[in-house]
Image 1 (tube, one colour):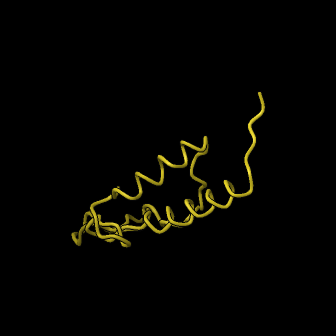
Image 2: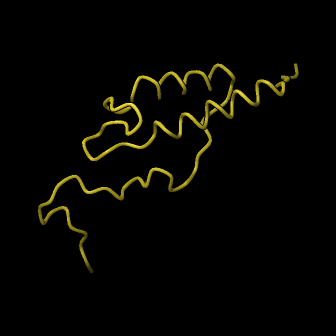
Length: 83
């Protein structure tokens, strides 16, 4: 059995992926920077489910969300340790 993906489907997949990228970023309080809902926001979940319906996983863009770069507090325990 062969799966066929049409040009319109590929265009829609690109649109879904582009919108998903917009909902990946969160502010320091943990809210989506696009819709201000607590992450993961409702729209992010919907977009992920849409990709699954197409039989696809979200594409990764390394460094896009800068995971691990945020500091949640201001105390000395939050500072990076040196050597």
